[in-house]
Image 1 (cartoon, helix red, strand yellow):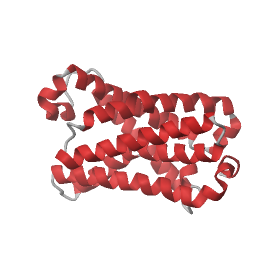
Image 2: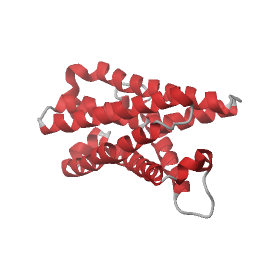
Image 3: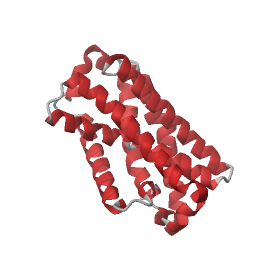
Length: 217
C-alpha cells in the first residue's frame, strides 16, 4: 500500500489497515433496517428523529463505507499499472463519495457531535480537511499534475482511515477503563493526529519523486 511505502513492515501495516476497514464497514451494517435501534442512535435522542439529521447520518455512513472500500485498490500502485481504466472509475467513485456524501454530511452532523465543543471542533476539522484534500486531488489530476495528485489523494485516504483508527483507539481505551466521554474526545483527536502524521510522513518520504510512486511501490 502506497501509504506505507518505505516502511519495513509495510505489508503487515497494509493487512492491519484492510482488516480495520473491513471491520468498520461490517460494523456499519448495524444501521441497516432491523428490529432494534443501534446504541448510537439511541444516544442521540430527539435528534435521531429529525429528518435532516437522519438523512445526513445515512449519507455519511454510506459515503464513508464506499470510500474505505474503493480507496483500498487506489492505494496500490500495481492496481493503477494493471488497469488504469478501473483506477479512474474507482477514483471518480471515491472522489464523489467524499465530496458529495461523506464529508458534507459529516460536517452537518459535527455541530451536534458527542464530546461537546472539542468533539464538534474535531469532526469539523477532519471533515473540512478531508473535503479539501480530495477536491485538490481531483483538480490536480484534471490539470495533469500527477505528483500533486498523488500527495493529495494520499492525504485524502489518510483522512478516510481516521474512522477505523478512531474506533480501534476507542476500543483500546474502553478495555483499559477510560470513561466514555473523555474516551470519545481523546480517541477522536488521536485519530486526527494519526491521519496527519501518516499522510505527511509519506509526503516527506516521497515528495522529491512522488510521480514515481506508481512505478516503484
